[in-house]
Image 1 (cartoon, rainbow, N blue to C red):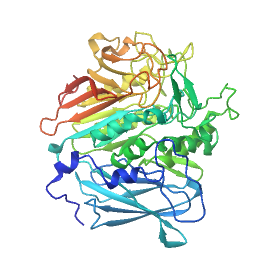
Image 2 (tube, one colour):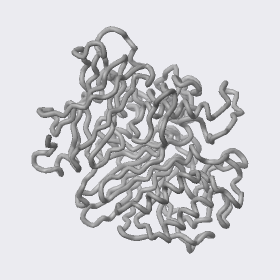
Image 3 (tube, helix red, strand yellow):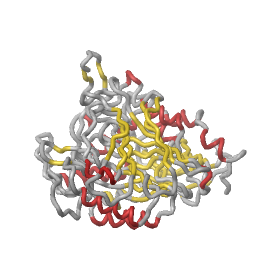
Image 4 (cartoon, helix red, strand yellow):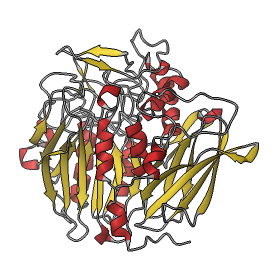
Length: 529
């Protein structure tokens, strides 16, 4: 069937969706402070957690939903919001084994068009008994370069004790991002804070009271599979998140707080809050819950674990490839980072080889390296160890820096054009330019790294720079005091706009409230700039 939009694709692309979409996104939870739906055995299945789409390409996408009981997932797609003509996709049977979540793959979609969809949940014993449909929309990636691409990125959600506050309207930045109507959202990790319990209220330094929506799973650190699942469900209690998910597809990666602060494979915890000390056990449970609650093309929850991998390439038309990195699952142990030989690094040898191979194959004008941690910012883990890459020694690469040096050298010598790094993690926003003439290691082409976040968490002061790769902090906006609440410091997200005519890429660092703090335009077809 045809998905063509009357009058051409451009008006539909940037229109802000209203009516049934907004109503559906708010369906049955009824606002920020609503409680989780009960698993009632009577009545019809309900999709009270909304819908979301992920890893959308020019011809495909993934649709996610959660039921309140066993149900068959059915997705109908259409070119119009009226659903006059539809195409039916029969999805999986949702049951307790996946916490009643499920994802349906849509394939054979037309490029560069607005797709409207509705998800219906049917009683598996009586398909005629169906719940109220929940609707959403997304736009497939363009096949033509001239159509352009615009997306947002950020991370760090519900952290440092700052959860959903009904007094300020919940996670307000999501509504601001929804109104910008981007093609997609890149979530750069720390999608939850499984290690961050929430108190019902917190008194701020100025005497004001911060109130949190609370749930049993957010009352302690997550250890069991159900507790991790409850952390992912928590964010979906917010009406802003549900409305955003129904309109904007996402590309999602993880970092540490999906499991536990600063974790690495093989770690044994020395933390009295945890009865389970083996972080590999916790990570397996967390990754399964992550796979259940996000539509990710390379990761599926089966057989009691998450199968597949986090790292992947999402091809978004001729202008853009997004290389989603996993700097958590394959890293070595956190240390002072001064070793002169390090083949594992922060990516692992296999992921580094994959990244080199895929960068070489890419024909996209722009190649976004979506990193869950920054490159040249010193992120400590305690008094002596390093959590990220840079370890504070301004000399030749050591420790995890060796792997990044190898990658940067490869990009230069293969003359791979149009690379830039996007990340979150440090809870402020900044722009760093890396240049060999300022660096101890000089065998690389200049590049930019842009940082944004938090989206709904505490704000923190700026981290120190490490001179190994010659970073210059061109812009920074960060609080002077640690862990400022969203009532005291604005939340941050970034915007990337690729012009279809010129191929120019413009990055805008935004603050909640509509302010553009910093803007930088990059030219296409260059190895470094």
